[in-house]
Length: 321
Image 1: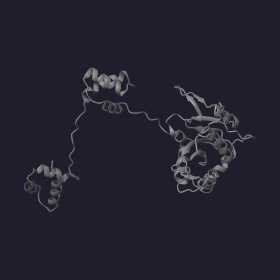
Image 2: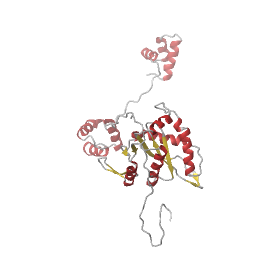
Image 3: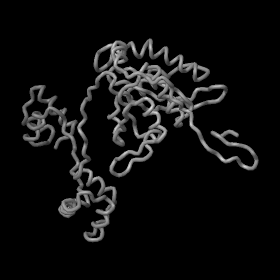
Image 4: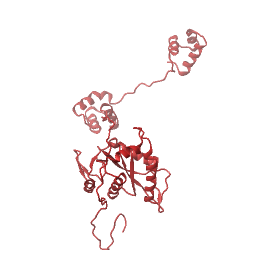
């Protein structure tokens, strides 16, 4: 094999009209090597021969074990190889080999179509920076609701992600929408899912069921670790963090609500949807006609807690006395 320098020199001499025999004589190489260099469009590269792995001789054993125990984990397989076949390598090497032999199954994704008023998706988002409010840096959270049919969104801001804030956010969202969609979709929030067993049966949070019954909507939770099932609100959260939040100034949460409402109505909902190529506000007007009417009375989102009064007479609530 010639070097990159020799390859370049051979091609330059050939361009000068020098015969291959003369080039080989000048450079002290074989004529066939000169011919191969002239036929190659790129300089030769050194490719290191694979060194092999300690597991290569054990591959028939590994495949037999996987046929019998397809879900075996890397630590257990390593234990078997060490005890019965003298393997001295690491667990990580076995784990990487298993990943190649047993690739992770990916569920195919597909675009979902929605009818107007059918679904609203909810999710919490912590905003990227901590504004100074009343002289104190505070975390600010947004419960964001997104309507997949129209691409419209609205949000409720708070200093925490408690159950009270979650319930209040629904009251505010339904009021701003002017109605209630048929179904609400959530991640596996503690405010919604009290417990999920091994068979994926959900036990709902009791206070959330009161909200659900009051507004008479259906509820659905996403499969764990599958954010694409609520992709509309995932995009809305990113949009709020990058399109609304940077360089905003406000002194109180009510002022933040007003600033956000102006941005939402004058910019976010007037944009052309990136995928559907429709005007969001026009679709939202159509969707509002199909929302279910709200009940006459607002939902009471406050929570009642029973506490025992200590001997000193001081009650503790939310870190305060």
